[in-house]
Image (cartoon, rainbow, N blue to C red; front, side, top):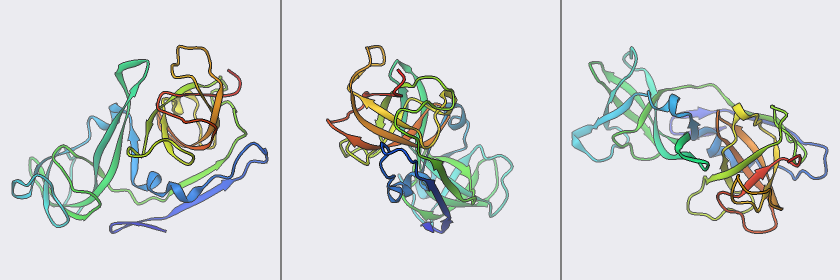
Length: 251
């Protein structure tokens, strides 16, 4: 059981190990914060979310016990609980820098409605990182988050049955180089056929428009979103960087 502030997340993790000898054991303990403290939404989901328009006493940031003013809550009620989301980064499509594939955000705080009006007043009950003007607000959920997949043999096709041709577009731990067990984002999501457990090759290719490069590592997808997926680097023979290619073995 993991605790984030006053919220308890029951993380039921059940992974069925693949029989293929090419698949390395999956290190589950490294994934806690990426399952219950972070998320990635499409721009269409993220854009309309209610947002913080003012902080208690004109402060630049708000902490536990402070109040925040939120605009856009739909029919809120007193004592209703919400999560505050802090934007971390936009995921940009390498082939079209004007297209955002998704928005990565952290669950930074929990808050309770204390006053109703044109804009609602919420009090921060738990804070993991200071709340700022512009942070988004979503209704609190208490359902367990489950990671349940069969890890596939390296190079398998996804749900679409089509060869995979994608790229690494972000390193989710900003200050670290991409190494074994690093968490990365791919421009390959559920609508493209990505599934948790899918094991793909990382290649030396740095452009999706170039010929396929030579394999330099493997990664396993563990969480998917509409146009983006998160994966862990399992093996690498040479340094991996953002924009390295990712593919199935059928390309």
